[in-house]
Image (cartoon, rainbow over all chains, first blue to last red; front, side, top):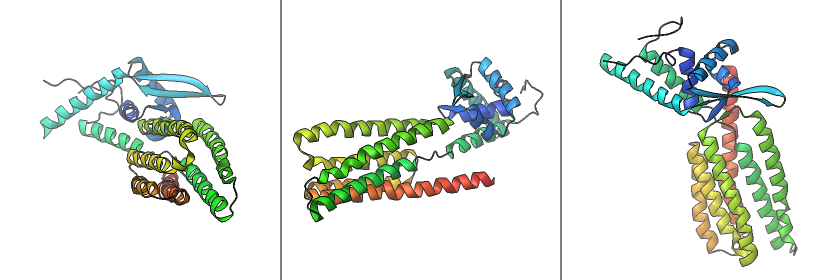
Length: 96
Length: 203
């Protein structure tokens, strides 16, 4: 019996954000926007969902008098991401 | 398989492909640190060659004044670091490891100055070459950049040669060490970064 894929992560943009954040220490919103080719509005909504799930920390501060948002994956987020990848591998192994 | 939003369904294969491509994207984001290698490479090389000229060729007794270049390079370093801190948009684990490595080496140079004040500056160059080699060897390994790994490795035989050479020859060997471990890899790294920036602008 397979586990269901985590619905928070099984969304293209949220998964892209998590995959990006898993390989860095922290990244600014503008960097994530550029790498995912998402619109600012859509990305804001998805980042908020990841934050509410406790998968990422979002820090809003001022940098050179401009608002600046930085995102960082949490321990809970790393665990969820690892579980998601393990479940994906189970699905793929069965299909082989 | 559930999908909580009204987004199109995507398969496990597509998920894995997305994860792979995003990790690859981040991996290819080389941050340009070449200016620090070029700054210190040229500063040390100029310092060594100027000291050699003043001491050996001109016979000027205050030859150590050549190292007034160090505080100038240090000031430029801090200005560059301040500018970079403003521009940086992503912090990678490699950047962090590099920062710890070079801060450690910088502190080692600082405390070694006290040791050489005590035991004499005539012993300093082999130690400095060893630190240049270790720093560039590890940094090159972290960013997977072969010219820097090779440049760093080549410093180690130079340490042995320097240990058996006179002080003035050691000065020239130190200039050679920074040329192969800082200046050549620094220029190649800068060229690669500029090429990458042009390619990403064209995409």
